Image (tube, rainbow, N blue to C red):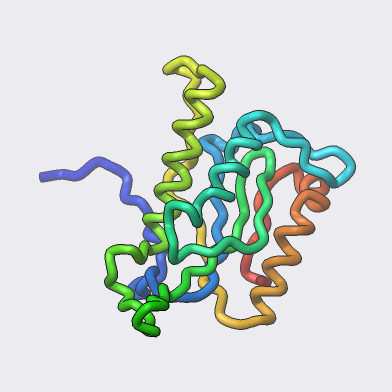
Length: 179
């Protein structure tokens, strides 16, 4: 049988357990990199209603995923950058950390799936978009497993400075190799 479908490139680190506690840098783009979330003026992001929804859904993630903690993030006109910290869950009654395979612990891909699903649905409902105008995220997402404090600080600065770089690079994403 001939498979004529294009093969998607795997972008997750092979063999890595994405439920492992630690910091993760996430970048998610809108479909076709359309500017749905706002504009940049004088180095500041001015969010649209869709951008406000994305921000609100991100802020609510720890309410749905109790092993998730949020760090620095920014909603850009056509993409989103954020740092998620996955943590061990602690049972205070028994003074023990719960095992990672506990049902309450979610992996990075499940959290990002939820974020994309919740935000898309809310944008499409609240903005009353018609079927042919529905908001969509790009398939998949980019991630970097943050390995040390220096890299964490570099990525935080990258996120904070992202709007300042927008006008100089016409909104294209930078190469993350230097982070």
